[in-house]
Length: 166
Image (cartoon, rainbow, N blue to C red):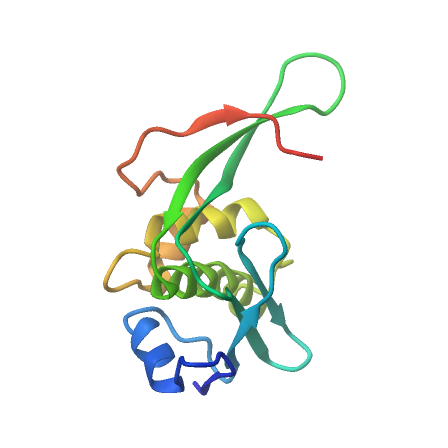
């Protein structure tokens, strides 16, 4: 797997060390790019299946931030399709944590599309996998199946119910 960094002051070797222990995405190239933001840092990445590339964008300039991650939903009783979203507020203290979270999330899209041959638009499953694994030293493809089964792997039981923003 080729890892390239276009982030000023962050080499490809540093990116490779940050992603060490995470599952590999086959022949896909991983590109680390800066993310310019206006008001506050946030998470942004994409998996480009046609170009066989995963793009991870790190907020620049980097400063620690928190992001609300929606990892599950339950249907509300009553008429219509309404959901109660489960979320966790995650602190990102370093570029390494941001890279690992984004890579886990995008790797799950890759895994769904390339390995399982399913639709890759399972955002809550991808967030659940990333949330459970981005701080672990070693992550295996078998961990992805637990996220698909909605097995709660992480220890923090402080998920909050909230309405997902429109």
